[in-house]
Image (cartoon, rainbow, N blue to C red; front, side, top):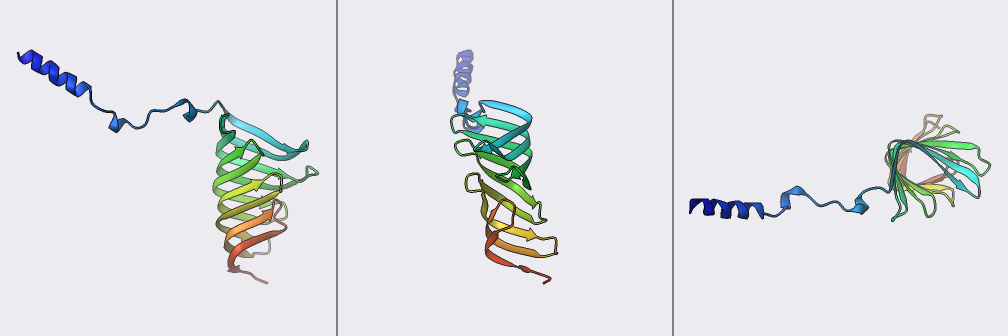
Length: 172
């Protein structure tokens, strides 16, 4: 009689729920392709517009996105394929439908004219050749100017830019 009781208790314990073990992963949670120490080249009309390197790349076919992480490093080029600027970030998403890019985490853009932009996220519109963010920004120049603000729009070489809500200090 005691043995039957123990079996009933064991069966009741074995039929518990999985509340403490977290969600079950599905196929969509895993990339369709992965690579390490990757380089991708984004083009428009056959011209190189960006070369992006990352320690890790994960491609998701269903949502048409490429996730780059582990030290993202991107070079941007003009329509004449001349280097304009370099961007570094912790992570980036490339949207395959339009080759736009969203950089996330400690984003730094250094232009070839000596301007440097610091922000938490930055969107690059490949077709419009514009970068923008709604986050806080800091811009420094070779002339020791430092400007701050919230919201930013610019061309990729940082020659024509606008801070939406600016504040800052200049030595001029």
